[in-house]
Figure 1 (cartoon, helix red, strand yellow):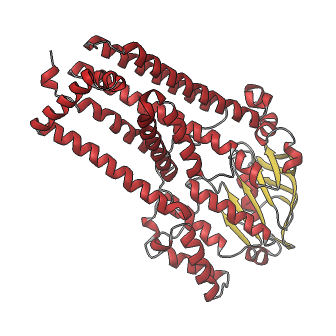
Figure 2 (cartoon, one colour):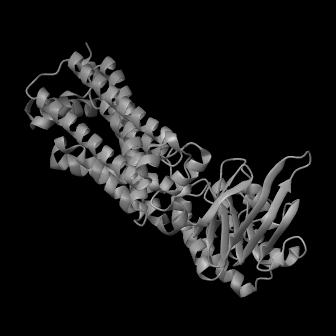
Figure 3 (cartoon, one colour):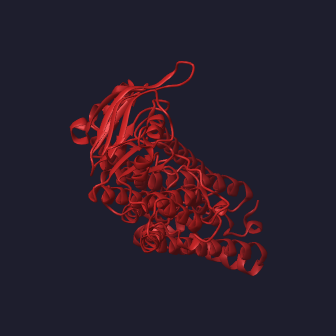
Length: 497
């Protein structure tokens, strides 16, 4: 399908971007093209797509030379650059019709394909709007649809998963595999080595403009991982623990580490409850508990972020990215999650507002807290005794709630879900989010059965919210709101010294 022979690209001034590259991608296969920034990936892809001239060599697509027979080569090719330029003055459907006209796609087929891919990527309802009004993710999906409706013999993609939410990325991988099953070939570059390892039939590694290794993925990786192979060529593998023990084993070690953290957290909470039983908590005692919890959460969060930065993942892969609402087959579940989180947040905000402006409600809440503190169950007595009373306590509690919201989302949502998705890539992300939520609830076993169920359900809800938005930031904000509401559930004038 794609044959590159002795391809060389030298820019004016003498700089050689790619030198003597030879590669063959047969029909029915996906080839992943990986390398560091500036290695020559985009230069090669653009030359294959026929949008960049080259110095030496030949490139043939389905038997058509891209230099001597460019129209025939481009007729069977679709190219999706890393930042596609769309005609923003046009509507989405207008742009797709333009592409369909250029490639002589019959009216009935184009309608079927536009409907199929538009519905899959949840873009059908927006196709009548101007492209200028689209978000970055919507533009990326439109560009993908414009490539897929052509049913190309060769699909060329430059970083295709950048900007896609998890559901759209999952759909994209499915459509790439479907293209290959129908006899097409896919040639794409990516920095997401895990995706390349699972998706590609063969891998080509380029370094400083030279193809240093290529071949079937299974043979290339062997008992190691694609990341290890790549890092060995890059000369950075000695700094990666996963290069020594193997990526799969490293994932399991990380998962076990999170479980150990869960056990320590649960035991720490249990020990604190046991220690505080029967003791009347003073302001200083409460502040000490807040301070200890704050330090524990900050330390835990820092350790996990350090692990992410130094080792197995990137911050973006673990949720440190902007909100991008989930589309595709899970969009209704995602929509329900947004509504439920919005309702819960509204209830908490309303409760706090009523508490601040309604004296009788404040008296009622304060009375309930005092009753549970002195006559409730053991856990209720301890927990309600920890609720802040004075302004000084509330300031410490607020800082603790913020630290807990950030840390728990990093550990139990971002990092735990990243590890689970690596260990169980075939499972639905929502199922993995539910599993992470169960782990989150188990870490609060000292709260009793009702507490574990309530916390577990909240953990599942936050997990669904993370999968639905692809970002931890919204989860952190709502988590903080839930925690901080306790700081307002007492009458300050009554307890203030």
